[in-house]
Image 1 (spheres, rainbow, N blue to C red):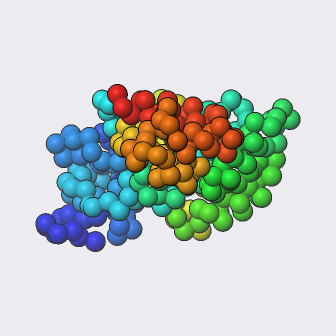
Image 2: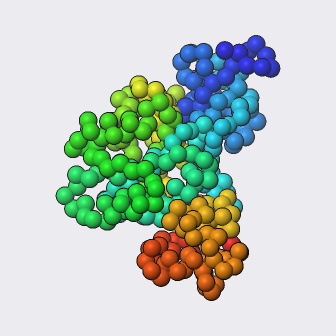
Image 3: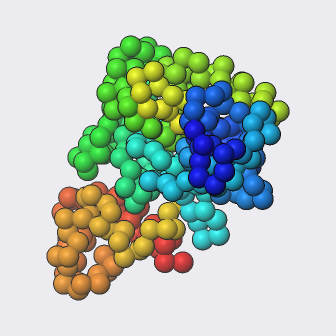
Length: 300
């Protein structure tokens, strides 16, 4: 396939992002190849459709095609692109290591802001000391309208595969989660050649496993793809307006607009419907603390 702008140009999918060095899969079916961005710009992300020139291991990314969706995290000083042109974000957590509920809540907010569907995956339910915290978290998320599944990749791989593919088949799905939650095991379960292809990508670009940024796109046999990204601990949300935060939280949204003041911040205002819901236990204390702390963070 040639792209507008010259017969030597072609469209490709970015299937490996190693931080300024990439693997691209041409749309015409040729084998994936290494590529660099023209001008050394840092604006390409996994999942991008790009216009390339050159071949072999000397391809150059000339331009980025318009994206239909883009997931990113942001702080006051930096924006980190995570994936483009995806249909679903699968947020993976587990009883061990100890998971952070706020990471899950932040990831759900980021997906909602980007208009991307979300699936919360509770992994490692086979652990003998799993306890109730992870199960309670799943029940709370379901009450808030989130789609969830509970699986054991190790103990019941067939059931886990079926549960995941019911949501991921035919869709481009980005895996996110704190380190150690089992994303790699999940990826290897659904993509049998994931480890081999990862080694091939690393060898082609002459990079080791401990790269600063390493994201990869793996096609699913059932259609769609899984996108593996490095684990991280904090999901910055500086791109969300503080005035819209309560509306983006499904357990807060029914009370927004029912306060005495139209611009209520839901902190100490009289006749605040959100604070009333907190007082009667409809909104949990942990969720309200999350809202209060994130609102303060976004106001800085």
